[in-house]
Every structure is written in structure tokens, then in C-alpha cells.
Length: 239
Image (cartoon, rainbow, N blue to C red; front, side, top):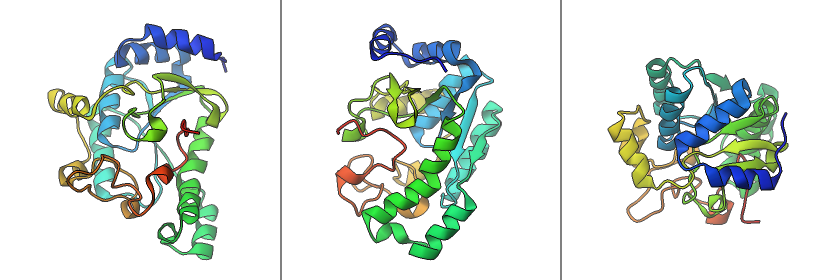
């Protein structure tokens, strides 16, 4: 795996002007050792559409936690058919899930932040770590204004949380309106939960529609304080 210094990453970021520039650089640099992670929110659909136009043979993966909404499975199929994608679906370890549920119950995440993070770790973080250990880089749909933890992310960054591989965030500086405009203009398939007020997509019991005046990620783990609202998949840049 090719290693980059922070100075090299800074220079790369200074030259990349658009999401498409970033994706072309990523695929020319990492070849088949890069993959797009998707939870099938609107941002992921946008980046997927961009990727296919640049690299029709690109790899895509998703984490099936076992607690997803049916609408999420529906859009998985829709996107797979539209773009001819063979999605790599990654599941958590059955034994780890069984042990967690036996010890803490099915709805442990409502009881404490520690329990919720344990569930995220078992169902999401550990499976992600396994697939990322086989890659040199991965692509996300993160945007800087989603929450404070992501506010310092860059278009290209060193992912110290995952062994120093490269993390590509092509629409990191986009606004929510830009995402909506792209979906409409390019007729991109999207998760129909959005039409019911779900502006951020996660597991069914941990995601709700937002209320008027709430921020776009208020529906995730809504019973917790804002500072706790990360599942561990992404670096906490605020520390």
C-alpha cells in the first residue's frame, strides 16, 4: 500500500477542484484497491452516479447490520439494477451479534450511550474494519456541514482510524441544496425514506424523520446529546 505524507495530501487537495477531479485522481491512483461505502442516503446516491460515469467497473460495498429499513433494501436493488452494480454486502459476525443480544437485549441501544456504541461497533464498525483492511482507499458521501465531527474533513485525507489508508470525500464541501439539485437533475435513484422526512439514513430503530427546524442529522440517535452522534465509522476531528 502506497503511503502518503500529510504534506503530499495537502498538495493533492490544493489541486482538486471538483468531485469528479477527485474521483478521477482516486481511481487512477488506487485502481481496484479502492471501493465506495454506501448507507444509501442521498449523498451516497449522488457519489455513486458520479463514480459510474467515471469508472463503470468500480467497487461498491454496504454494511447490512440486520436492522435496516425495507426502503433501504429497495434502493439497494434499484441502484444495483440501474448502474449494473454487483454490490458487496458485508454482514456482522453472527456470534458477536448473538453474544451481544444475549447479554444486553435486542434494544440495548436505547439504554445507554455505551450500549449504543457497542451495537454500532458489533454491527457496523467491526465489519467495516474487515473490508477496509483489504483496501488502500475508500470513498464516502460525507459532507462537512453534517455535524461538528465532520467539519474539519478534507476531500482527500489520511484515515488514521483505519491503518493510514486514504479516505476520499468527493462532496465534502457541498451543501444539502447541491445534493438535492444533483439528484433531481440527473434523476438519481434515492431512498424513499427521504420523502417521509428522513434526511439521514441509518438502522431502523435508531433513525427517525426530522422535525421542522431540526438539523439534517437530528433523526440519528435522537435521544442522545449531539456530541455523541457518531457510530465510529468516521474519525472524530474535533478531538
